[in-house]
Amino acid sequence: MSGESGAVRLSAFDRALLAGEEGEAPKLAMRILARMAEVRGAESMLDIEAAHIDSTIYVGDAGLEFAERLAGLGARVRVPSTLNVSGLDEFHWQEWSVPPEWAEKSARQMRAYDSMGTIPTWTCAPYQGRQTPRFGQQIAWGESNAVAFANSVIGARTERYPDLLDICCAITGRAPAVGLHLDENRLATRVLRLRDVPEELAAADDFYPVLGHLLGPFAEDDPVAISGLPVIPEEDQLKALGAAAASSGAVALFHIPGVTPEAPTLADALGGREPAAILDVGLPELRAARRELTTHAEGTLDMVVLGSPHFSFAEFGKLAALLRERGPERALPDEGGCELVVTTSRAVRDLAERAGLLEPLHAFGGRLMVDTCVLATPMTPGTTRRLMTNSAKYAWYSPGLLGSAVAFGSLAECVESARRGRVVREPGPWDP
Amino acid sequence: MTVSDGGARLHGQVVVAGNASGAVLYATQPLSFWGGYDAASGRITDTHHPLAGATAAGTALVLPATRGSSTTTAVLLEAIRRETAPAALITCGVDAFLALACVVGLEMYGRSPVLVSVGEDDFRRLADWPRLEVADRALTRVDG
Image (cartoon, rainbow over all chains, first blue to last red; front, side, top):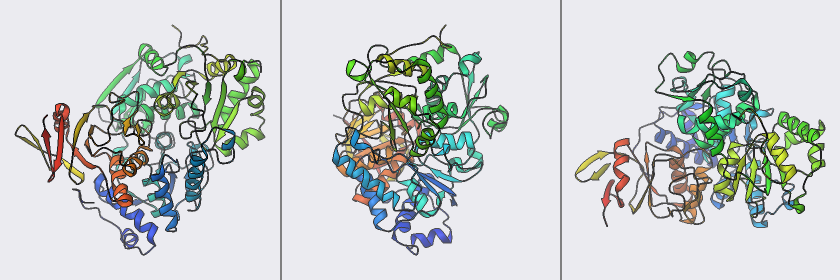
C-alpha cells in the first residue's frame, strides 16, 4: 500500500491500537485511519465524541464483507454511534418487491452493525432525534445531508465521513485532525447573495431544496455563506437546504448570518476576510434551478415519494393537515392513480402514530417505509418510472439510481398530484 | 511522480501506487459513484454527468473529485471486488473518498486502481490524452 505522504503524529493510544493491544478490529480500523490521515496530510488525530455510520447501506457484497470482517473480529464502537439507513425496511420488506437474496444480505449487514454496540436509529436524519450532537462537539458523521446539518445548523464539527471510514472512527474513537474539525477551515470563503427574494417565497418549503440545488455547484466543497435571506428558516427547511446542496455539490458547511450558530453576522462567517467568490441569485436563477429539478413536467405518475431526508414529526404534521384539508377522494392506483410513499425512521413513525398524525395517511392509502429510503433499497418496483417528490435529493438521485423521471414540487403539489395520479401545479410564490 | 506530456514534466502525488494503462475518460465535473457508477457493469450512470453511459471499467478515469454521497466509497469498493473498477483514477488534488476505497480494497481484496492526484495545470493537460500509462511512478501519454 505504498504511496507518497507525510508523517502523522500518532498518540500512544493510536500506536497501541495499531499494535493490536486492544484487539484485531481496532487494529484494522486504526491501520485504515492512519493511512487516511497520511493521505489527508493530517498532523495528528483527535478524539471524537460520537459517530453516525453510513456504512450500513447494503450496496453490494464488498460493504457486507467489510462489515462482517469487523464484526467477526469482535468490533465494538468506543463512542455513541447512530446508524444511517439500511438497505431495507427490516420488518416490512415482504410487503414490497424485494428480492429475497438482497433482503438476506441487507439483513446480515444490519446484524453486523447491530453487533458492534451501536444505536439502531436507522435514519439519515439522526439530528432530529435524541442523539443530536451539541455545538462544538467533535464527531465523525457519514451521510452527506447529516454532515451538512450537523456542521451548519448545530455547529458540531465533522468532516464528510465516507462509508467504511465512519465505522473505523467509531471503533477507535479517533479521527484525523483535518478539515472541518479545525477552526481555521470553518470560515466561509464564498458567498451566495440572494437578491430581492420575496418573503413569501423565502417562507415556502419548496424554496430551500431549490436554493440548495443552486448552492451545491457554486460552493463545491468549500464552506459557504448565504446572505440576503429575508426570513428565519425552520429546521426542516434548513434540512432540505443542506440535503440539496450535498447532492448537487459536496457542501458540508453553510452559514446563514443571524440563523446558524457560527455566523452572527456575514463578517463573522467570513472571519473578516473578503470572499473568494460571490454569486448573486435572484428570481430568474431560482426559477431556472427549480425547473432543472424536474425531468417529468406533466402527465401521469407512478409514485409520489416524500421523506428524503427522513420525514420529521413536524413534516408529518404538515402532511396530515394537507391530507385532511383536501379529503380522501382520489384516483386509486388501479384506476390510473399513483402510490403515495413516505420514508422515515422508526422513532419518528412511532411518535407520529401516537400523535394521530398517520391516520390521514392510512385513510388515503399511503404507505410508510422505515429504516431505508427509495434510493437505498429495491423495495420500489422497477416499473416505477415517473416520480414526484418535494425532495431535491430524491429528485437528484432518482434518475441515476432508479432510472426514473422526476417532477419536483411543493408538499401541497405532491399531495394534490398523489390524489389525481398526475403532476398538478398550484398557484404560489413562484409565479411571476 | 512525473507527468510526461510532450517533454513537459510536472509533479503529482501517488496516493496508491502501481502500474496501469487504459483509455482516458476525462471530465471536468465531479462524480458521485453512488447513483453514478454501476458496479455490476462498470458503467457511469449519473445522468447529470457528461460521461453518462461510458464504460469506465479498466480505463484511466480522470475526474476533478467525487461529489455528494458518502456511499461513493462503498460503490467503488464493490467495483474493486467485482473487477469493474477503473484501472487508474486521476484526480485534481487528493480525493479522500476514492483514496479510502482503494486503501480498503487493498486490505480486503489485495487489489486497487492506481490512484494519482495532480495539480490543476496537469489536470487540464490530460484533457486530450487518448490513453495513458502509469508505470514506474510516471504518468505517460500513449497515442493511437
